[in-house]
Image (cartoon, rainbow, N blue to C red; front, side, top):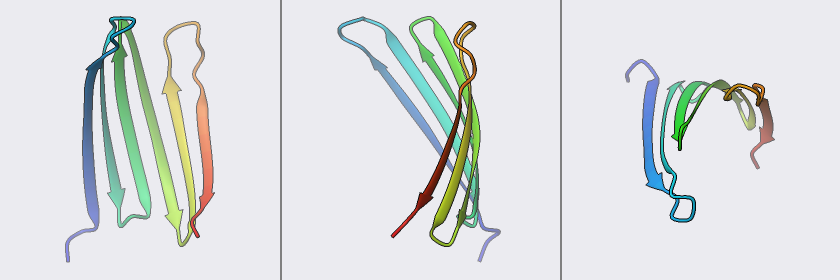
Length: 87
């Protein structure tokens, strides 16, 4: 049956044709039995780096997600909270 741990990794590379800025984004998510999720991400856009950490919890049809964004100096560090209900 396994230990209930799953992981996903994503990578996105591209270029904006108008601004000519290239970007690279990478992220990882580890979940335990589709109940608890841990996430991390990194983005490099032009000459700017941004990182993020977060977690999520799913209980029955309810979900809660939290993310903390590490932004470049002067932009602050926003926090994102999402609460959802799946029909």
